[in-house]
Image (tube, rainbow over all chains, first blue to last red; front, top):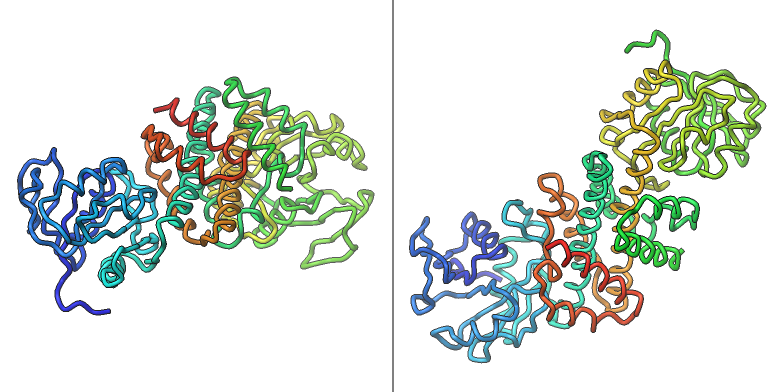
Length: 252
Length: 252
């Protein structure tokens, strides 16, 4: 699908996702007309206006709302226009969390964003959804500018996917965090685990998690598991260790 | 440290670790004299003898025992020689789980080995330990042939490290496994999560797990967490979700 003019967007919200979208789009053939956030100082950067008052919003092809989930309904209801394409970037919010005054859509980049870390947009799945069929090609086009992996997906499936993302990213990162904590306490260098963390992910490029599973729980090696439980001082760590080991054992 | 002759080794045990060591060493300047496993057919491959009877073991500089932890004491006790350098490859077994008849050592590659997946030896930490100081340089030399990351580490610290490895690899891989399971059930393509898994690991090359943490639990976003718990059908999955979310919340 070809659009004869450059797509113009406004980014509403300037947290992690908003920042990353801004940084990505301004390097690509997209007109980032405006960035809105209540805390922004009014200014201009390379053709983009930074504003802090929604009444200053101009006409754009797509308004990308990158704000907290629970603020989406009231914020999109407060916009000083109607019947324009307004999309949110949330993994969990329903399409219809956006005000019914607007043409609703979703533009959800399935990735973990921290302000400091650069991301590789090309490989990031972008999950799109639209209330009106005729808005989908524009979202597809905008997605294609960033990524090779743009998929149309319903609110229901997107929510399942987001739950999966919490498991593979948030939860596994927390396990890294806990490991770092108790290695620090044991005066062992956490850096020694970094190649293993990388390999844990890399392995999955060629095999399924089930095939990639190794370790004492899979082998039902109770001696090692007991030794590990003895090494863990924190009862909460013991509880997580037991629960995850039991869960692994139930699979093998 | 320079050794005037090529180091000769025998690999005892031919499971995942034994296989990978064999495949790695035979491409490098190391004499792999023999590979022993009770189930092997007697044969020869490119100068390496495959044997199934320990009585056929010849003199080697280092005997690398890559067998189940609980078999190490009796197996090393049954070897038909004494006072030679015998090392195990275990993360958890003590140095002195090796028979006292031998010069004991450890050669523990800190990595996850599956038969099918190739590994990048250069970055794998190899943890070495020796009963006799004078054996350490030889283990260091052998380690250097494979890896740029050879570290001397005591049994106690190695056990802590192995526990850390279980958290960052076994447990996080299991979370990937659970995510794959329930996405399959929800008819959502697990492949959409693969770039996120890779990024979860890649992010840690530049920041700590604590800095990299994102998600509803970190944000104390109870609405999303409740929605997720509703999506999870399996009570065991709910339990893991709750426990890990609580643990994340306690950190932020």
